[in-house]
Length: 232
View 1 (spheres, one colour):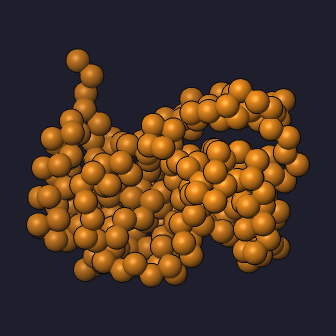
View 2 (cartoon, rainbow, N blue to C red; view 1 turned 135 degrees about the vertical axis):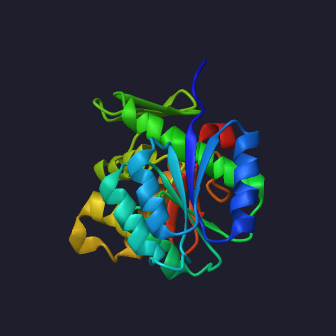
């Protein structure tokens, strides 16, 4: 029998912890709870967790600092929770090492979808192959060839690099600065309009309806996310 994947919840609100724990248990996960950042870090050293859920509003440690501390210790996926919906907070959390950002209050189906996406992305990282497939999209990384719905799609070098970067983080938000720095270099980390032009070009080439994209989604004020095929 396969052991259940264990999720670490770090949140100081008992009601939130109870809600998340009952939902995760019902979906087949094991759960460890921590009500402070210090307790969460201590638990991290003792357990083998598949994912951490971190509230940014903890009483003892700044949430962004905690995300950074976890990321320096472990590559496990991190989903942050916050009552704040500001763009700067989202960008800071994602740039600091979080894999996703969920604003309170939230529905459990949305939350579980984010959990599954983060875990799937982690598995893909661990078992990375030379060919990436996501629904109708196929990327041959070595040949630098892209196919959509069985047809070859001609991309420029930058378009391919951007698409591949989104694919490598499928299901995860990629911030503007992350994409720009990776594809064009750190000097272009603030050229958001430049990125929008390339995203628009990619959508024209791979989306069935570029005006209503189903694969490359915009996270307003934050960045972009390649949607998992089973969620499209």
